[in-house]
Image (cartoon, rainbow, N blue to C red; front, side, top):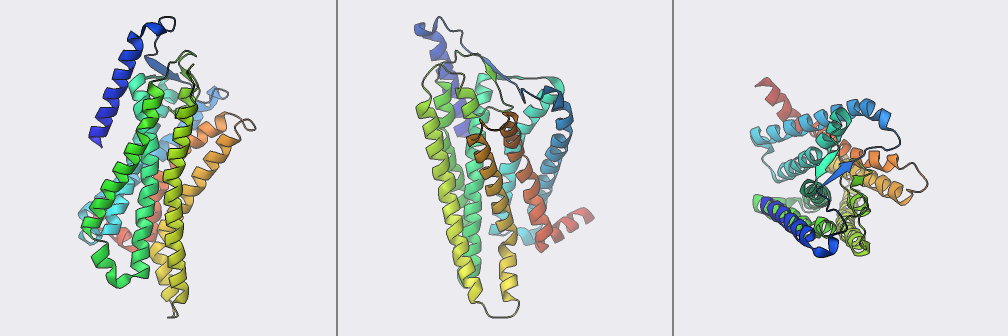
Length: 331
């Protein structure tokens, strides 16, 4: 992952050098940085909004750090499912650190400028890590499918080796498919100013400032994003369909509730992740009918609320994690 990030930064810097050296762009001053304007219509609300956002950020960081430390120190949690949960927490932490500190810096100190490479690096992390989370949910759904539908084969299928391969797959698939998004945006010529009417460097907000044709740029992100997210959601749906089919056949008393409880936390997180994503998509599609600040706020919350709730849901509903946190506090 670090190699991919270094490659991306090098490519962005190379593209900028070629663009600045191009004689065809003499009439247009090259853009070296962007200005992020959060909530253009409600500037006075930023200080008040920063308080709940700051608290949610601390909650997300603290909850995910606690979960990671608990899984690391508690030997009983050294199992494939909790390794996948650790991956989800790491992705949440990176997403939060990529978006929220910059937003709070804008609110508190007015630090609106963001360098050209930093903007497209943020764009890459947001696009790739969002689909990595979706892919992680898909792998966890498969884990629950094997645990409930093939319990006797679970130890031989879901092994540490399987988890390692799954992690490599999650990172590689989503990083390489998402890599062209910031690179396509970085090669555009920006002649409509450098003011982004957003708190973060989304592809749509940044590419609007270009005087080039951005059709292919937007089309690639749409196709790539929905291919990744769509395939994950379809596989999750199929996994839970098989799980429900098997559970309904169980006739032993209390067995149904026990089987469903093993995947209850996972299902809640998937439902919440999908719901927030769906609301964000709908508000962007209906952008002309709603205030422009609403999609901006929802985009920020989408990078903050799931990371804050994911470890809490698992911590409250999973007996082993709850016991591990209690043991951690006693030390």
